[in-house]
Image 1 (spheres, rainbow, N blue to C red):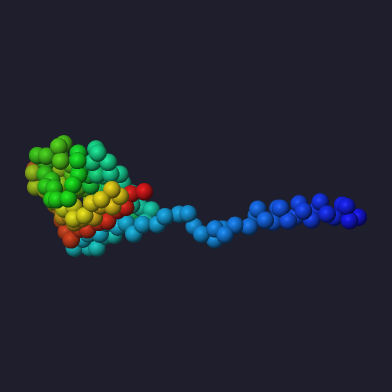
Image 2: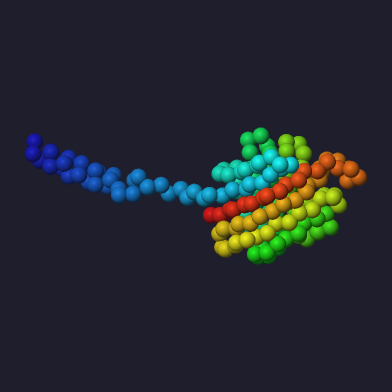
Length: 163
């Protein structure tokens, strides 16, 4: 009986030794305090968490937010991005980028009609985190530019950290 128990006890010791780990309770997930905040025609808007994502590389900066209702905001800058102020209008949408506010089925853009324009200021930038401010007047992309409806986006700020 002792000869049978000895290998069993050794096996039990080995199994329990390898199943215990000092890092079992730690989490490998990384969380960031990313956000986009603004006022749309005076009403507060905020996107955080999984509804906010983007990319940042040598081709530019692209940040996109969306809530469960399909409302969102996105903006992109084309080309090399550095600290400073970027101006957006219908005359430079293909070379500079644009700012957009989206409702379900309708977009309001800084780059669609002559009445739409905006600015985005990068206040801090490093290899992984971009912060800044923005404001723009977006004109409806589903209407004629002769008399489009507009949305005023003011007091905008953002911070996004890329993995």
